[in-house]
Image 1 (spheres, rainbow, N blue to C red):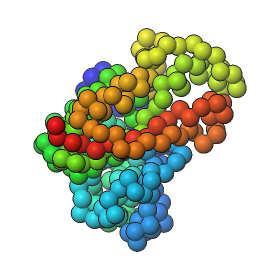
Image 2: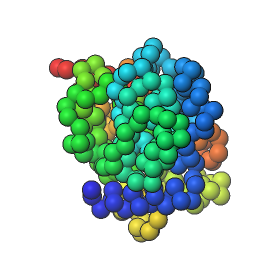
Image 3: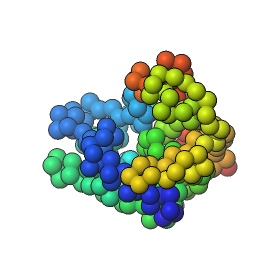
Image 4: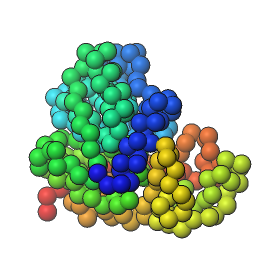
Length: 253
């Protein structure tokens, strides 16, 4: 792991200890509904992924939940019948998935690692990858798309959530006060703009070219897209959607 990944791994472990939103696992009621075929997941903060972005039935298909620890997407998909592997940089986030799987009797595998290096998996292993907003925590996003393409089968699907870099133009403390004050450049790097603080994640605002063209350069065709925000909870939500989700299909050229 890189130094950035190691730092963010520890920071996410702390988020689990603090019980922040994205570390809170799904309830038994949600898992039971998934067993009955009534399920949905999110890869951004508020909206759910359209159901037609998935196969009509996911029973038996191999899904990689990439940088997706926390006991959320993985257990739901496993309860719906998929063969699920959850991959994440945080041991404690992965433990959330393990605990839900044990509580609910789910067959689910967890692997710890850096999302830019999926060497734990052979080529063309998975039918589908679910990748919630997470590549904001790495310095270079393009290796993520290349590795995702490598481990997906031909015509496999990558469902990704990521940040619109416009979010990182503004001073975060001023935004908390209800003010949008341009303070940074894009691409954004926490390493350049502020001190590294123990226990706080390092974030990176990647260009839309790296996010979108990066996928197509890796061998994907983007087949769907939608926007999302923080559900109206932030000042910027009243001006622009700051999250994107894409459905991309791997095609051999």
